[in-house]
Image (cartoon, rainbow, N blue to C red):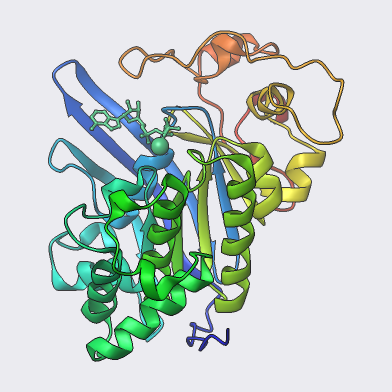
Length: 338
Ligand SMILES: Nc1ncnc2c1ncn2[C@@H]1O[C@H](COP(=O)(O)OP(=O)(O)OP(=O)(O)O)[C@@H](O)[C@H]1O
Ligand SMILES: [Mg+2]
């Protein structure tokens, strides 16, 4: 089906996150969920974010969307600069999260697929009504046009008989169909950036592969940028152009996907590769990373990975490493590469 391509800004960088710090203020203390993370999202590219559970992937995404449970969780410093298609730039951290400007960015320009589909689907409205509402909220079109567009996007994410399914409620769909309906809703406004938080984790592998292929096709068709969050390096290998590896709220490594797979530098990244089955490594023994992620209330001094790191040195337990560019575009925060 032909898709009308939306004008994207000439500027390659659509979003620039600089030294972002997001914290939760709880009874037990402060959780540094995101602790000084920087990266850019570029037009037409897929940025993969990978790391174990609790390392701050979702909170990075929710900070960009300004959907944190404020004031308990909030951005304490850093900037998130968005470059809208109409030109100029806006620092998302400075906007009132309920403002018209933030609402316009959310949905119209930056759409998010949540880890849990029911977070964004309303059980008491039909799938169709929800997509139509999203379209009409952000685009000046009549209901009939919005309905046609809703059917078109449901078709694009492979929902069979979309003209019938559009009248169904979320509970009438299977988990995989709900997930796809949510992807359709996110895509319905031609966002320049799609943030996908574990979009396929809950699905069986055949459906997962199909949805990922779909997303990649649509991404190429629209020239959209994707920030893809997953703990699955296989998904990263299949989808991403560039990868950011996070550990306890910090970025530990960043590189082009090929470079990262051929030459992982951080002992944490190397551990992730040894702990998962990857094609081509069949028969090789899988070794889980020893130890566990430290409690956010009781973080070790120095590098947070040092207590689990097979190559830790004295300095690693005392001081956090700086970020080193080992090859052009390949960054690692580890004392081994000083
Ligand atoms: N509402 C909250 N209140 C307090 N702490 C929170 C809250 N939400 C998240 N956190 C903490 O922030 C840190 C980062 O959480 P986040 O949800 O970003 O992890 P994640 O990388 O997305 O993990 P997963 O792979 O399990 O989804 C964790 O230490 C988590 O406990
Ligand atoms: Mg998460």
